[in-house]
Length: 200
Image 1 (cartoon, rainbow, N blue to C red):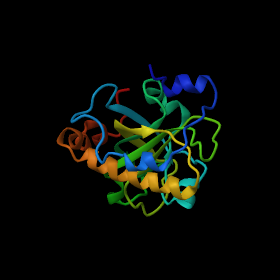
Image 2 (image 1 turned 180 degrees about the vertical axis):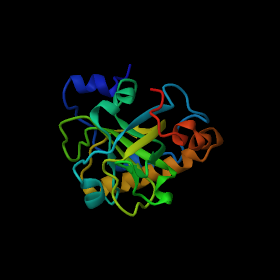
Image 3 (image 1 turned 90 degrees about the horizontal axis):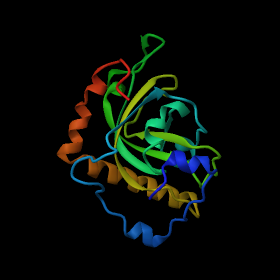
């Protein structure tokens, strides 16, 4: 039986297989069943934290980090890896709407749950890349996400270019996988209609 991310974390920082060309060539364009199956959907909410700042600068893929306590609903039931779903950032901060209306919509996302072996992180993190060009950062804003499926395991890389290549593929796979009707409907989930904390 595959260990959950929380179980792996108890044993220390794991090693990850290095991605090779055969992995890239065998990647499917759509992943998961035609409708989400348990443990999905998984709801995550939390205030966006400052991370290492590498996603945008090093990889061209800015990510939003959730606080440690926000990821337990997922880390307790899923393995480390890359996932897909939808996310929404609150326009408000400190009671004021500071993001433009378009930035507060629901967007597709990809999420990494793990240790980012290429950067040799020492603790489990959840990093979400929302597929939208935000005009400014949104640290301190509440983010809500619904995780709907698994894309691939966490891997290590021989180069930054290889990592970037897989991230771009992850984005395409996520968009293709979310295009199915049973997944698209989650964009209208009640979670995204309310500012109250959702069911966990």
